Length: 196
Length: 267
Picture (cartoon, rainbow over the protein chains, first blue to last red):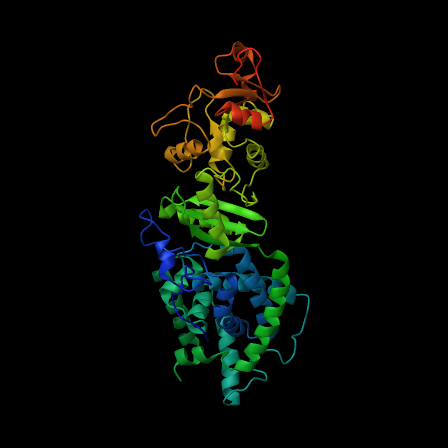
């Protein structure tokens, strides 16, 4: 997984750095280089694996993950110009992804009342490789417990353990402060431990 | 097993190949949609000119942005505006020609500015109209804000014209330095009044560094009658002021297809 932690989008694009380019700037802008935001393709290349893995783990379903990641990247492209250049891409991408997951869950709940049944074999814990049978059931059980958590706690937990973000990044993705991110995760963990 | 380790392992059972395959599927779908909604690319670079450094952006249709770089905060805001419409790509080579053109133009080569102008960044149709009309004001002439407003059919909208010029993304190429106050004062300029003076001087106006007004030696050309007069000609007193272009000298007026007034004989 390509994951270089902090990745501000203001980086050099195509041209290699040369001192000639620096010389183009006169005294009014002494050290400033022309920092253009990365091309969207470069951002996509860098983060698509990570986002796809996250969506797979959250949805536990390949078709959903594929749909969600497609939607995430299209939304990201539309919103990209409004992303401030000095801000971090990673939390921003996760913010788009969790919003989509939330919408999907809401629509899914609506749909579930009409369509009964599940697309067989697509869901985690049915046919993927586990160390043993018990662990598979444990995973399904854990998923159910996580699904019962309040939305904010669930999302914070997902970002912490499925995406591996730190608390500052979680705060960036969900809005709110670092402390509230920490509190959400710890509340969620407390509940899970009590039920485990 | 600790609950944290277990949590971290959930969903990790997806093999790398499975993820790659999903990514491949997803990427081809995204590419297909992106092809339709893509913003066009614009080559961006900084060029040197006698007027200072310029941030230049070029689209496939011509020059989109030509921005005086006087401070760095300005740069970020300008690029932000550009990004809403274009995907900027740094390409110094594509914009290098612009610096050369500006240099030759200031040195007196009237035909130096060859790039076509792309006004995509101008959002409002009125502003687009103003900038379009402004391109018809020839080198060696200036027009008043009010006069330019009249040319687009809004003689009472001098302020709105001023705003349009303020937002002009392509100064020099769209000659917003050729617009002055109706009373003959030079007025302001996005890049600073000194640059406006420098540009007007290179176009034949006799202005020293501290000049606040265009000189009295200009001749007044009437856009409607195609006649040009001295500023003190008795016809100018009752003429329709909004139709007037001020020319640096009679030669420029002749070039714009006007004939001298038979009363004041400016030629």
